[in-house]
Image 1 (cartoon, helix red, strand yellow):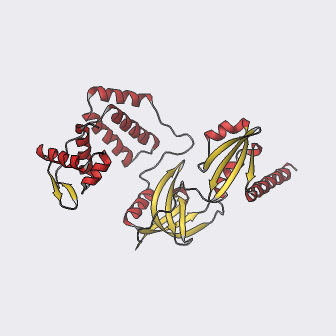
Image 2 (tube, rainbow, N blue to C red):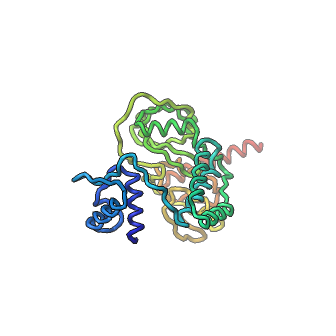
Image 3 (cartoon, rainbow, N blue to C red):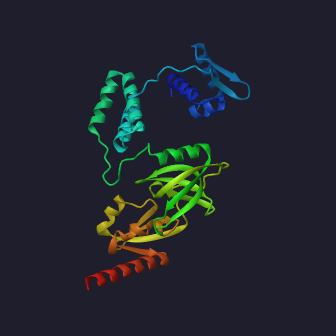
Length: 312
């Protein structure tokens, strides 16, 4: 990285952080601390109001705003694509409008050639969601949970469980939100279960933010974290390609098998993968563990019995 790019990088760091240590800048930009001191001095000489506190680091004078940054062709292309994706896959609302307004501001400061290239790319590429409704980033439930996470407020959920079809009341400590495949997932500490749990937002019938706050809690599990149950499934060659296209998120690895492919998964509970496996019918065989084989067999027998009763 040349010195000009490095100095611009410093400016972005100072703009986004209240206090910056020389050793942090040295590590980030892969230079010596001596070089950082010389660079900071150069910024001060051109009028950037930086001041240092011994033993703490550098600060940008409060109230000072850096001039608009310029974007490279690759950066402009990435921004245009990201905002195009956001506006295409979300419902109309304040967030979508804010993204559109932001894109207009970015477009106004781009060089003519870069703007033309980015707009041409935007016109060539479209984003569509066929199997799920558009994301609603302005949904009250979503906004409430964001606020609760930020303020560390306990939330009372009325949660509709998928497998038992029961609604339970849970007091949870909300920690993070993750968009997983087709749904938003709330990662939270469940006080009823005394453990981390994931809650789909579309299964939360109602929620109330309580006055009670909670202490910071280490994040031990996320929506993509795998459990301790190792599942091996053999798929016929005829459907291997389609399985790979619609792969389960707990997938680990695969290996060739006679007439098919064995795929390995790591799950927290069988319910995570059971319905997905059943969707592949007789062309998917659970090799292990035996308990999951037994569950799949039982469900298949129940289906056969139900069909036999219906046909008679």
